[in-house]
Amino acid sequence: MKDAFGLPQSLLVLGGTSEIALATARRLIARRTRTVWLAGRPSPGLDRAAEHLRGLGAEVRTVAFDALAPATHEGALGKVFAEGDVDMVLLAFGTLGDQAHDERDPAAAVRVAQTNYTGAVSSGLVCAGALQAQGHGSLVVLSSVAGERARRANFIYGSSKAGLDAFAQGLGDALYGTGVHVMVVRPGFVRTRMTASLPEAPLATTPEAVAAAVELGLRRRAETVWVPGALRVVMSALRHLPRAVFRRLPV
View (cartoon, one colour):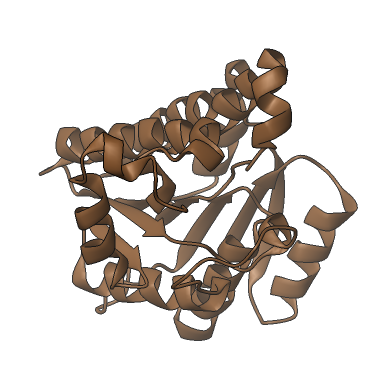
């Protein structure tokens, strides 16, 4: 169960090698979290992540999970919930893709969409059903400001995040009043391995800053969290720009 401050004692991470997810897990372990499940493709990286969190004092287990294999999600994630209640699920997997390449390779573009959206719909619904069955818990979904308005530079990724964001909002409305809390997190440019080759954007942030915002959002039972907070105003302005103006912006 969550503590008096709304923080989880048990955590399931979908995307167990995500830098943002691991920063969040570290922060929660420093507070109250004692049991962590890392779900991801079996790899040395997943094993290293588990060992790292064990070194912080948590009981950590791994579970094989592939976003691109929806038929396996119910079985794989059901094993986690069968072991006991899960206070928080962090849906943190995703892929940026390569816009220039993916425009020329539809199959690669579809893979981005299937990972970021289809895989999230499948696993999100499985976890939402399990949380509802136990009567409590939070589902935290890592979305992106890229989903607020698709840009020429990354519209494949942005459109997949737009779908994810809309899905998570609708799921939150569907679960309202059931004891299950859905929180959508919309970071801007986060300095991670995934973005290392890209030019840094204004209002760039870090995995640790996103983790701090997630913790604050849990305490407040927020439904939407922007990281950094100033992006709420920036994206509101960009979202309402006429299309002819928006397409000329260097974004």
